[in-house]
Amino acid sequence: MSKLSEALKKKEFAVTSEVGPPKGVNIKACIEDAELIKDRVTAINVTDNQSAVMRISSKAICRHLVEKGMEPVFQLVCRDRNRIALQSDLLGVWSLGIQNVLCLTGDHNSLGDHQGSMPVFDLDSVQLIKAITDLNAGRDMEGNELDGSPDLFHGAVVTPESDPVEPQLIKMKKKIDAGAQFFQTQAVYSPDVFEKFMNEAQKLGVPVMVGIVVLKSAGMAKFMNANVAGVSVPDSIIKQMADTPKEDRAKKSIEISAQIIRQVKSMCQGAHIMPLGWDKHVPAILEQAGL
Amino acid sequence: MILTEQKPMKEILKLLNDEKNIFLIGCNGCAEVCDTGGKEACLKMKGELEKAGKKVLGCIDIDFLCNKMLDRIRIDRNMDIIKNADSILVLSCGIGVQAVGAVIEKPVCPANNSVFVGGFQGLWPSTERCEECGKCFLGLTSGICPITACTKGLLNGPCGGALKGMCEVDKERECGWHNIYERLKKLGKLKKLNMFVEARDYRKMMPDKKTRGSKYYDIESEEEVIVNE
Image (cartoon, rainbow over all chains, first blue to last red; front, side):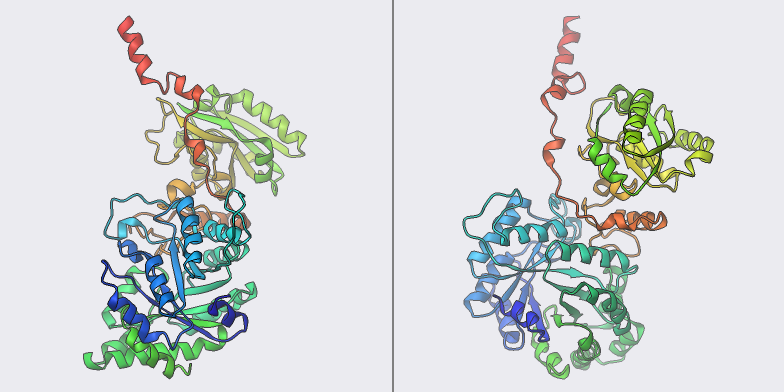
């Protein structure tokens, strides 16, 4: 059983963070990012060709983390593989000692750096979750018996600040019915919006880890508000960032992230910190958040 | 020519499970040629539905259901009856179902699967609204195709990418799943979204032997005939 699943089962407040695989084979910096946070988190997500930009595989970086004694969460998107490749990779990661999987639809190819590539989406995220549930039970999607089955701890994502939020909740319930065992959320900046979401989500009985995207500047916040679905940074936070001189921005950003975690901690079962390269600040965020 | 085949009655009845009063609209275009639209198919369907305990309020056949203007005129003329229907069962290709759904705020349900575009495409100029996937999903969404309206062709709900109802791929393109949600909400049919939809069977898109041998597919033999003449 993975440490993440154990922590969530014991109702400990679990913390995860993430690293992004590089474009190329120089993985030293990526592994160092993970080393910076490993003692403060239960597991580390490894993104899968994030933003549809081609990079070294999530599977490879996950295995490197395992070799260094860290616990990865293998992120898997539906964009690049058909159902044969997805199932094959899932069996593969289990054989490499990778126990956690996060299932996502994936950004569309046209957002990335191989815009003319074929969007696969043979399965959607709900069907992918169901496929993993089947693999865990010893069968592939066609019902064929496996010679040895994995026991993957599989989770999914949900966007609490989406407007309207109802389609998110409907799909979240479908993901749970398909077997999802935990959720990591899209970035949350408004505790009151998150509280309303959690009032509904907690009825579904599956642990939710609040997503925290570490802000780097007011410009980044404005960009996300205009371009990233379901992310809404309130003006008050943008102003705090804008009013802070450049050299103090990291400190301010740590404060903001820690404050959000403190405010929502009692509503959910964990936090997932997305530092987008600012991994070195994750320990300070957790410290200030009282974790 | 859009080739269609009727869905199994069991599937149609499952799609109409919560609905008692049904109105039938059949297409006299391609579907009529396939015996899956037109008057005869409508009457047969009426009998089947009544046998299953449904009430069929009425039935109209329209020359080409892909002609939205014509649909609107004929539907308006029959509105007194149609307004009492719980659902409209459409005997046509996927375009016809979407066209009927677009002109009336009522749940619509496909009676057929669209399997193949062979040469003449009715009055509809492109295949971009119906991929002839061979397993019509319009009954789950009440008339908006999740395969062609969603850039990712997702079957179980929206991805996390839509912003203010617009698709992540193109800010001027509407999110298909946002529209499906809004439509079902308006119709009081959000419950339809709870159902798990299995992965597609792509074999259904491959032309079978009969289709490959037909003049709608076989360009090569057609040329031969002309040469012989």
